[in-house]
Length: 384
Ligand code: COS
Image 1 (cartoon, rainbow, N blue to C red):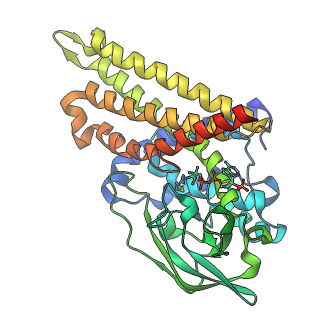
Image 2: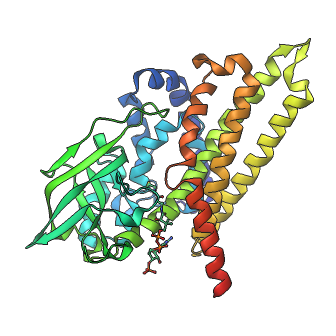
């Protein structure tokens, strides 16, 4: 764990320099080829970024939540696809194991996750279970010392190169909701796993999702997360609370970059004999973006500090994700507007961000799910 500001600043500075020198110049190439060059993946490994959230005893950096979001603010001032490659391993793919796994399960996977050798993916969503995650149908039937998994998971980020899937499956068919769900650690090499074709998406070129189909997939009973049935949904929800805060930080990072690009363009671009930044209508777009970005950043830092202090932050994480992702969409829209015709062309780069950021209002819970979580938390608190 980084416990002093000086060490944290060194890490932030290394990430900042890596983003500027290596990632930003590769953005167009990644967009064109739909691949992240291996040299950049190696660079992320060397910085220890795959181990950001893994405990030190397993070789990770064990960042606090505040440290993590501050690293993310830096790492995402470029195409979000770069963060996506490590996002599942540091987030939704690993944190259930870190919190609820047995010592043997952690030892089996976390050291190789920390180095980036094993990519972890999180398998919750299904064709018929998106926002209503507790209605998932993938079954896990116990047969002796194994469970047999059958079902289809959808839109699974990093599935094409995952080494480990954390899979939520129903172990108790008599329980239709959350209570019948358990989590499993499934080695991607297990027979009975079939990957679908990578999804064709609106944005995030270089980051890949696909179906993961389990057909009679025999998983050792020892791979039941924590060795306890019926805890899988709760684990998934805890993972998503943290994941949502992480995504809110991603939104802040990407919006920071888009606004910097829009400001630079507005100060350079001349119309009617002066820089367009001198026009008050353009200033309004810049100012609104700056104010909203500042608000989102403050929310993310506050929620992270609360989490580090031991508070349950379901409400704050959902609020930060809701506000930051909607803010990011508005900033992207204004940035394209400031770039004008140039913003609509692929060469500007802003068009790419505009497409990329649309996902933030959807994944790890839509804006509507965040609203639902916030309102439920409010009502619960009022009843207590
Ligand atoms: N932390 C810990 N436990 C939680 C929790 C949280 N944040 N939220 C819910 N739970 C627990 C509840 O306490 C409950 O357990 P008990 O019955 O023992 O009390 C259980 O989980 C079921 O909770 P709830 O009744 O609220 O479940 P719902 O079916 O109503 O679903 C929502 C809740 C809609 C919030 C959930 O399905 C959800 O987040 N959907 C969106 C899924 C998503 O984000 N998908 C993105 C793709 S994955 S990257």
